[in-house]
Length: 438
Ligand SMILES: *Cc1c(COP(=O)(O)O)cnc(C)c1O
Image (cartoon, rainbow, N blue to C red):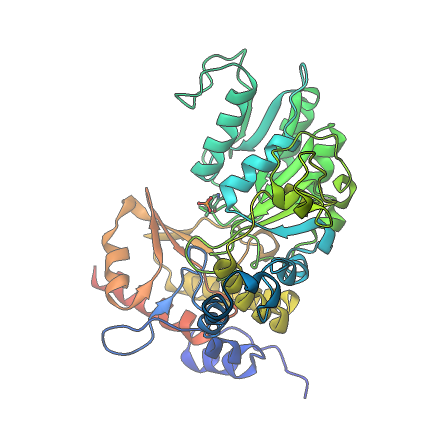
């Protein structure tokens, strides 16, 4: 039976009708949904901060605990899922989530660590071409990482994480126009073109954590390359949220964490992408460790480092198996659901949320996230007039888990794997009621 598109209506029966048509709705049952004191499920909208726990995660980790208990060191080769190649079991699944080839992907470390390791190789200031382009409002960790890399390369004291004077200022920050909150692609293009021969690296987020703006990564990569720069992305808020095609977009490198949309648990192990064309770029400087060494000869313990081809050559240490097991549980769910299907539901779910927010018609709230679904992921950032946090407190008391970002934003991220159209409906009702009381 062909499902007819249901027109959005601001009523519960519309939400329920869309839910009935949702071919992914059973995926919610694969997750533990936290409960309110009343025993009801909370309305969880913070999968952009920490994804929920898949019901299978415990089993995946327990398998490794059992194998360690029963086999000790032999688990490296004889565990049900041998630890020696364990990270390889995740490679293809992770590659599929970000539109990469397996050779281009590896799971390792955590996000900021990986940004540094990749900048060691891909931020190569050379004479006048020494600048990095970032968003002015990038996530602070990215700003610290970039500023400290610049300082590392430029004999500037690293202690203040400030670049002291304009001659030495190697940071180009992209800012929205006055009175605007999101970046325009034509402004990004202009800045990159105007500074073209001075830019060594363009490093942007795929989706801005604050505004929820998604960037046209394909186009930005093209613009950066035309200027002669290397282009990398921080996909913390994009991986598992948008459909990505890192290989086809020709992105040089990318890094992302897995505890947000990828549900690997707090501090989970992160992902890395290095484009195939750099797979054999052994001339690039890199910080090396034994896990990046050619695996055929790794255990000969030779003192000469021979990096593996592709992203795996950036590994340093043997990876944390429990973390890999947790991420694997979630990636198996992604494989089953398919990123394309998830994104399709996500667009509908977030559009419905936007529709209901507009229906509230209250000037005390506004949406700062771009209105076109191609320019955003699942998150909507709601700006609250006069930075009034009482509204956030009031919805929290009604069982909503969203997050407040200073100075005045409530971020709400309906996640297609475990959020439903009724969640969105209930949220909008609560918000409306709380606004009515005030
Ligand atoms: C969540 C997030 C981080 C967090 O970095 P960790 O190294 O995982 O602690 C960094 N950058 C961005 C853009 C993020 O959204």
